[in-house]
Every structure is written in structure tokens, then in C-alpha cells.
Length: 82
Length: 82
Image (cartoon, rainbow over all chains, first blue to last red; front, side):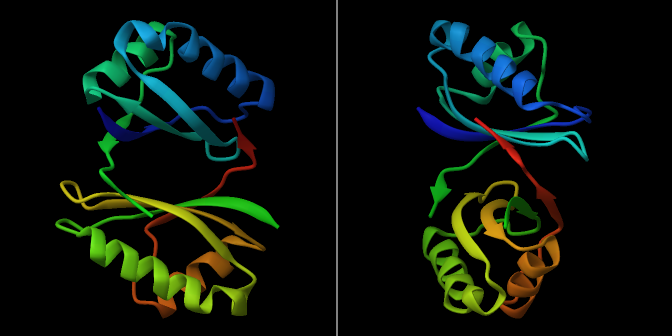
């Protein structure tokens, strides 16, 4: 397992409810890929959303996001943290 | 006060010690700008570093990062979180 930060773009105007619903959709199926989405942060003005997860691979993160309708634009493994 | 996610690029090969030192340098002066850097995540392979902070403005975040020698490439306010 490793930690990943993924970035979504083009979500201008996203609301708190929409962020919660998107996150809940990921949580509902993440177990099938052994992924866990821990937190997400959204900027409605620029449409950028950051998601922090633990997962077996970058591909597993993307499979969950694709199935729930919001594929990530970038996914970086972030092995270092403070 | 608001929450910000900022992104650094070009830090390929960053080590755990270097990330800790950079974060400690920010913490040492952040009070002068009423900023608090909460966490940071780094990908040594791509050279991308994400920093989460609370701050009075985007400019305050950048002033701290500039003074400690690592200006951010992007800074987004992230008012929504889950």
C-alpha cells in the first residue's frame, strides 16, 4: 500500500454537497480495489479538487474514480509526508 | 482565515530530511504572516510537493514560501473539504 494525491480539474462551481456525494460514491466501491480515500479538498473557483488516498497502485485509484464518473487528471504517489 | 493547498514543482529527488527541513523553515517564520502549514506530501519521482495550510490570503502563503526559498507554482484556496 502507498499513499497517493490525485488532482481533478474542470470542476468549477462544485458545491459542498457535490463534493460529499462524489466522495461518498468513491467510498462505496473503494473496497473492491483495496483503495481508501481519506480526504478531499476542493476549490470551486478554479475547479481543482485534490484527493488523498491509500491504495495498492495509481491504477487502482483511477479505476475507482473512473467508475464513479470523475477520473483524475493527475495521480502522484506521495511516499514522503510531514 | 481560509484553507489553501499549494503545489511545488521541480523538486525531483527530494528526501524525507529535505522535506522536513523545508517544512521546519516554513514553520519557523509562518507566524509573522499568520499562516500555519499543517501538512505536506512529496513525490520525489515527479518532484511535486503539496502543502496544506491555513492563512489569511494566498499572498501570505507565498511570502512565507518565498522567504524560505521554495516559492509555490500554484496556490488554490480550498474552502470545501471532506
